[in-house]
Image 1 (tube, rainbow, N blue to C red):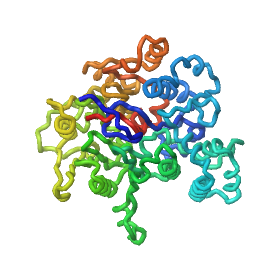
Image 2 (image 1 turned 180 degrees about the vertical axis):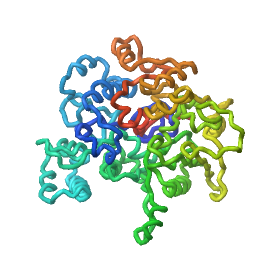
Image 3 (image 1 turned 45 degrees about the horizontal axis):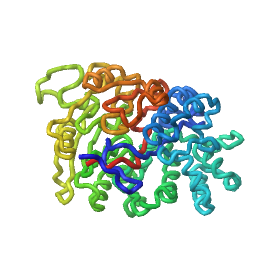
Length: 483
């Protein structure tokens, strides 16, 4: 069936419908302030070189998104953009900002929300209280222009370069701030203190920016149960709600996946299952419990979808042993706790105490491919590192399984994952570097509408240090309806 564009401006019912609108955040000054002793507190494994990340890597990502989603905004301007030493095109507080209506930056959206004096006061008070900023400085912030204030609230830096707040370097991973489920948005509840300011900012954007006016009543907030604060500490830990968007996938119009991970709690997953069913948004919600390890912090670091019948996946979660290639006798060995997972599917109207169980991740992907997406064959699985040891593990760490679909069969991945790229080529897909593709677009030898069955490679030396790929760096809010 041909995809149909849903008339609602906020609508996502798959991972691979043609992308029409999304939220992204270009790396800001705060990223360049992260020091080694604070990197892990701010959820980075290493410090990054900001200029390299911006100019040699992320800027390509942004230009590519503009070409596919907002062609007129970028075509014919490449030489102008590339020669701009100040990068004013990319800066939401600069008059030359690209200001797309399709590729949206929360910093710019926040500046528009801050134009409302009442909302401005609420946001500034909330953030200053959370960050422990003095009342006098809070009053000074209120006097800033909306563009300057938005920049300060996100980067932490005042126009005078005073570092007023800690940075929120993880905002480049906009997937985690919320997830679009049809015409609803599920808000996050970050597991780590370093991401709380992001949550405050995005809550106000989703509730107060005109882009989201049509779905004000469709923003889902998962709250603690009444009296949670009265529970003993160990019971609070058991019932704590933490939720990040990298653990939520809208894989089909009738099916959502929820990961239980280092960042998303089992209690949050339980609440989301019941909420989505109560709102009659989907028939199935499948909960995938993965190890609470940094190496697989969300389910989208373990697998993502490329086509209706094709997925890229970390082979250590395969049902066919590990990438060592051992043919061990079934039942004689305990599962390796590092790579063991559990999968439970809850169907609307069925007994929650008796979920459908899937033994392996492949089994679930086969089921989605056949029964939710209407394919006549099982899923085709492409494995991280071509399922060769140690490349499968090395490349999963640098986000080989974390790909964003611009449309079915056209995805963005990192150029450093050589074995995974080889496996994708072996599966019959074309591979091209983003710089070469942009050159073809610029000289009109190729149009984005004509790109098919292609993996686009993004430079990734610095981006991969931040531990997130193109899927993490996006929050789709509109795709073509897929079924």
